[in-house]
Length: 271
Image (cartoon, rainbow, N blue to C red; front, top):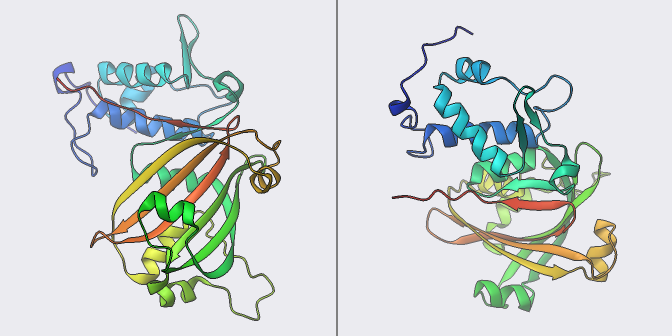
């Protein structure tokens, strides 16, 4: 790739992306973060130099330095004078898988870097504890799915997920279920997510995702699924998906082992 002329610092952060007018240094930090968390920027090959990043992404040196400063503040990289930039090993980050929490694209990246197989548990009422939290009646029927999400690298379980799809989407659910006579009755989204499967099958456009994050102790069921001690610390994530009409068509409850999973949130201060 030819190396473009370095842009003036005053122009560094105004290249918009598809998600909106996100500053260019933030776009670059997001791209590099995804590469680090997926394992593509690690190992003996080392981290690209500032000059290489400027040429590769067509940005100024100031932009690169600001992006790297953010990643350093997040604990993902270390910068040492004379030895350049290195990716921090997982152990230095607490041994946990760090999941960025900014947009739907990062949820999809998480799915691409892990794998899950769902069991379909039929049409059921919402558990009262979930119905209360999302202000939904327990009288409605929802298709229930359950699966353990694992890291591709080592197969370790990082989430026990129970997903609920609104009963009105019976045809869409039927499209993703295995044939009744299939030897394997699990649903394997591969690098996709269940909400992608459902929304594509039903012709839905997703307009909004909400997340509630809570610290809880592992129940016996959660502990067994995640191979952790009972009452161990967990992150419980309740995620709700809304279609173009504002209707909640899917929700999921995931339990993550506290020592293997962390959420990273990036907040820009304006003004």
